[in-house]
Amino acid sequence: MEPRLGHPMARRKLHDKYFKQAKREGYLARSAYKLIELDDRRRLLRPGDTVLDLGCAPGSWLQVAAQRVGPRGRVVGIDLNPVAGSFGPNVRTIVGDFTEIDPADLLDDGRPANVVLSDMAPKTSGHGDHFHSVRLCERIVATLPVLLRPGGSLVMKVFEGEAFPPLLAEVRVLFRDVKTIKPRATREMSRETYITAKRYRPPREQETGDNSESGGRGAKHTPGKGSAS
Ligand SMILES: C[S@@+](CC[C@H](N)C(=O)[O-])C[C@H]1O[C@@H](n2cnc3c(N)ncnc32)[C@H](O)[C@@H]1O
Image (cartoon, rainbow, N blue to C red; front, side):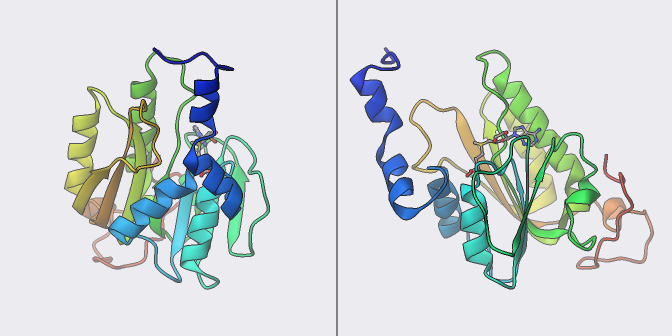
């Protein structure tokens, strides 16, 4: 049985090793170690990359991504809540709802990102959380032609359940290299897992955002506003 909050065992779980390590190492949340492990295993973030961080608050993934892309890189984050710290000049954050914002507003100079990260999670209620989580992921997949450049990478948190296999199958069509990983920092009881996908191949007709034949693989997207919504 789960220990009640306030019970010494519950406190021990809350203040687990990653929580303490994050405090020691100056990360805003223990989730930092999830991205560190995912990136160490999959080599997703490179110096100079442009990264979108969906569901970025309080901000530990922003910290990790900004470190890994370095001063020539760029990180743009969005969350319903404001972030908890200040970041370097290569980080911009937006307070807003990813499902409502025009995806083009997340781009810097209209250029799609090298990497899209999502640690977004619906407020857990115990009812339908899995379906809410999959809906968020579906929204991300639908906006990829605007957000992600061909060849780019995606990391997306999802709560496992019956709608997970069709979502994964959809991602497998769009990326050449797909793996699901449950990082060590994920809590034991959690149903969350991360889809990590590399080498994005957008659907041909969406590749330029305007159905024209002129842009091939590697061509820059110049999407019009709302083109993927
Ligand atoms: C687990 S937290 C992210 C932690 C973050 N990766 C970090 O390391 O600091 C999940 C976040 O997703 C955000 N979120 C959930 N739904 C969202 C939405 N529709 N648009 C933007 N953010 C959303 C929540 O507000 C919450 O801050």
